[in-house]
Structures are given as structure tokens and as C-alpha cells.
Length: 390
Ligand SMILES: *Cc1c(COP(=O)(O)O)cnc(C)c1O
Image (tube, rainbow, N blue to C red; front, side, top):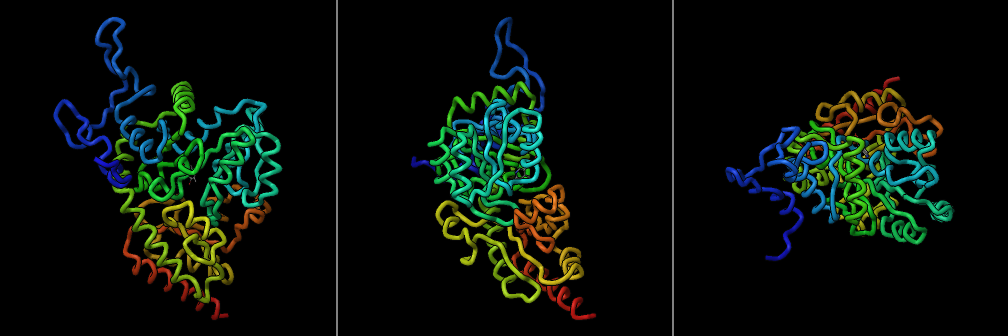
């Protein structure tokens, strides 16, 4: 049989693996420990921090979907990022994007402040800045594309080539697209990191992470560190996440269709100043996104034209978007980055990253697109009206 399509892999991974009862869906193994079959006779598993069949089923699915040699499933996305940091010695330099996920920014800064490694944040779309940073011979380059919340696109293949030429590994945070829409290892990255909390689980009810390595030796090192530090993900979380992965592809298609429809409807509305979506031909990263992604994803950001009353109208006046952080679930969310996800950044750093006080971020869910558009347009119309009333 020909190699199955990734969508088929996502649906069928680990099905029919139960040899005891022939269960179609593998059972969840909650036991923390496993008997030795005799003196000096360890089975495959002994203790669930070190290894667990349910967690391994999820790891197998994610390694196959990302095209890696192995996957470590972690307790959160941040645990996965912390795990990758174990590859760095105190003298090593980490190059990270200046607009990376806030939690990653805080982790890199805090660990480097304690001397665990050195870090330098740069604008990865500035080729001069990239060349200067690589000239310092970093050990690891971190990339996050599309970025949060402005959905800037970075050329993974070009950065991987440049990083390798400088003797560095490239790690890509693939949370915003999932392996359904982007596979960084195929573009030359060495490591892929996920917050499975987002699209991979997809139902906003599990915190989890994953680290997939192209190289078996790197994977082995990371798996050992996960066990040593206790970063491994839980069995029930793994069970739920694998359940979510089975519907990843159809969910991503619906998220993207809704994002396309919403981005198109927002453009040209008088209460909208700018729309950021890589699927728009006007987006500066559009051509690159067409090359390196298999879709544009389900996140859209836009600037509200007007004052704070207009902004409040949009953030509080939606009935089909929950005002909440996070993303990637089947329910649509609206978020104000400046006071929510990016509140920890100081205002100057936010300005440098291009995050204005009028920026609104949407995570498009799996609802009917027409309903989402109607809800948004009604709120934007009210935002116009509230400002006309002086
Ligand atoms: C949410 C997120 C993380 C952190 O993951 P947690 O599961 O919340 O620990 C890392 N990177 C990106 C891009 C994220 O969106």
C-alpha cells in the first residue's frame, strides 16, 4: 500500500493497538507503575514519568505527522520549550525572535539572567540583524512563524540553512499552524515545538506540549532530560490530545475557511484600520506563506479605527467570540493583546514589536463562517455609531 496521507495518519494512529480485548480506540493507561515480570525482568514500562503507553501513542502520532525521529510529550508547551533549553550550556548563545510568544520571551530572559545560557532577541525579517547574530556562532536559533499576534512570516528553509552554516540547530515553534498546515522539519528545521494546548488538542480542555526532533540522538537526549526533570505529559491529557488529533485536518480546514471569510469581511469596514492575515495578497509574508505553508491558518488580527469606546464595543459586543486568551479551539475567541496576552511586555517593547493598543486578535473556531462575520460586522457598526455620538 502507498504511504498514507497525513490526514489518514492523524485519524488512524494507534487504532487497534490493544491486544487484550481488540479495542478499536486504545485504552488510557492511568497506572503510575508497572510490575516487573520477575527478578531483573523489566517489561517495556516500569514508571509512568519515564514511559507510558498512552503518552507514547500520542508521541508516535506527532512524530509521524511532523516527520521526526521521535517526540517527547510534555506537560505544557512551556515544559517543551524548557526541555529544548537543556541543549544549551552556560556559554551557548540562543537567537530568538523579538516578537516570540510572551511565555517563551520570559523563559529565555529569566534563564539567561541566571546564567544558564546567553540570549539575543532580533527581528528575523531583518537579514542584516540575522547575519550579525549568526556571526556570533549561536548554538540554537529559535523561530516562530506565523508570529503572534501580527502573523509575520519567517523563511524557515533560509534560516535553517544559515543556522546550519553557523553551526547552530534550528528549533521552530509550530503551534500556530500545526503539522496539518506546516512541517518545519521538511524545510530543514532540527526541532519542532508545540503547545498542544492549541490546535493539536483543539478543544480548550488540555494544557500540553510536544517536542519533535529530526535526529534520533537529539530526541534521545531530550527524552532523557524530560525524565530527569519530570517534564513528561500526563496519561489522561495524552489520551484527550490524541482524540483531538484525529480531527485535526477537518478542523484546520474549517478554522482557515472562517479566517479567510472574516479577513475578507473586515477589509474595507470603516471601523477597521488594518487587517493582518497571511492569506491576504496584501500581507507582506503572503508569497512566502504560499511557499512554505499548506494553508494560512485560523488566526486573524486587526486594528480598530477609533478611540477606546470603539475598541470596547468590539471586545465586549460580540456574542459568538469569547473574550479570552489562548487559541486553536473549536470555539471562536477575541483577545486584546496589549492588555491580555502581551500585557507583560513593556509598552516600548510592544511598540517595537508593532503591537498597538487598538490591535484585536481573533482565533476563528469551527462555527459557521456567516454567523461569525455577521457578529463581527454588527459589533463594528456599533463601534462606528458610538463614535458618531459625541
Ligand atoms: C500557548 C503557546 C505556548 C505555550 O504553551 P502552553 O501550553 O501554554 O505552556 C508556546 N508557544 C506558542 C506559540 C503558544 O501559542
